[in-house]
Image 1 (cartoon, one colour):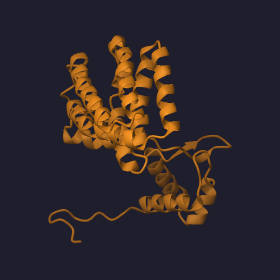
Image 2: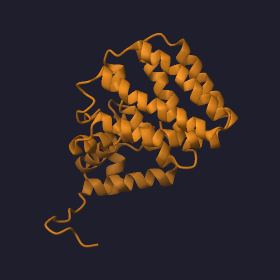
Image 3: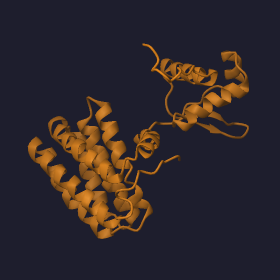
Image 4: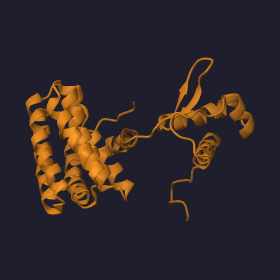
Length: 248
């Protein structure tokens, strides 16, 4: 494919090539989160590169959330578990530069989350339904705003995981968008609103458990529309502003 006119094709830097090779090696070796990679000295020798280039490659992987580099005598690169928040953090830079607002993110959730609830009602298992019930119980028992926010977001993650059991792209994108509203946990919102959310979630969970795809979708759609309204009411100065870049 020819490069776009007026835009020269950028060659991949050595550190980027090395980062790709390290990811390929990790995938082939079957390493899991918590496993450690060889030391910088060993990796640099194996790859035939300088430690400076290796460190740059490791930094690329660290920024993307794939590894963390521990300091100290027993330190070094260690695999971490990639989460939807890592995906969301990368996306926020593009959202921010494109001028995407929190309202637009909410509208995207209105499209995605009802579909995930519908799929969850079709694909749920007894084990997954038990996880939803456990979440609702913990949400009901929560006292602090942080706990209320955590369990509210966890519910949506669970629904997305159930609905996206056969398509991780859908669940990852849906969960990531929801995670960008973690602003609730950083600012003084209305705890009463977050507490009442558990009743809404219970209705959705019951529809999912009953296998009622239409009702699950309708309830989730109503919930998402109300969420946009609530966010706009509680954070009027933010709702139409560009999404912040989550660099950490």
